[in-house]
Length: 297
Image (spheres, rainbow, N blue to C red):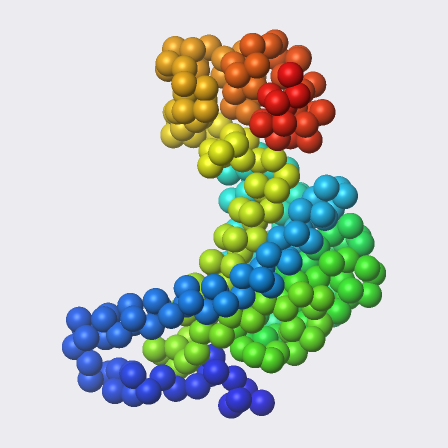
C-alpha cells in the first residue's frame, strides 16, 4: 500500500539529485515548496469546519489535542507549546501528544508509531472527554498511532479532525473532518519532513490562531492575551497597549502595572475609562472579547 502514496513517490524533477549543483537543487526545492501553499488553500473549507469545531470545544470547556508520530507529532507539539505565551492559555488547553512520549520530540522512539494501544493509553492519561477535539496528524495518512487515537476519540464522543497529505487516507476515514493537503512527491523521496511537514505546520497555524481569535484572544490583529515571560514580551505588551489605545509609553507602562501585567485588561481600562475590577467584569460579561467589553458601555 505504501507504493500508492504520493508522499512516497519519486519526484521526476529530482531524479538526479546527487548530480545537481547546489543552486540548481535549491531552486527546484523552493519551487516545490511553493506548491504547498496551494495544496493547503484547497483545504480551507475543511480547515474552517475544524476551526468552528475547535471554538465550540473551547467554549464548552474542552481542549484542543494534537496527536501524531515523528515529524507530525513534533509539529502538533510545537503548536501546542506556543499557545500559552502567545494567547495566555493554560498549558492544558492545547496539548500535543507524540508517539513515544515527550522524549520522542528529540530522539526517535522505534516502533511507537505502530503501537495502537499507546495512543489510547496517552488519551486516557490526559482524561479525554467528549468536550475535547482531537486532531490526528500523519503525512502518510496511515500511521496506526494516529488512526487508533482518532478511533478512540470518536468512540467516547469527542470531535475528531485528520490532517494528512494523501487522498484518500485511512486517517481520514477515522475522523469527522478530513483535511487532506496533497503535497505530492518530496524532492528527497519519502522525506515527509519537507513539503508534507510544511503543509502540516501551516494547517496547525491556521487551526490554533483562528480558534483563538474565535474565543476573544485577539483585538484587531493584536495578541492582547500574551504572557509577559521575558523582556521582549514585556516591551511587546507595551507596544500593543499603545497601538490599541493611542496612548504614550508612560501611560502604557502605568496601566500595564495597574492591570497586573494583563495587556487585555489594561486596554479595556484605558478605552473605557474604568478601574481594574470593572474591566475584569466587563471582559467576563463579554466572554473575553475586548470589543464586546467596550461596546457594552
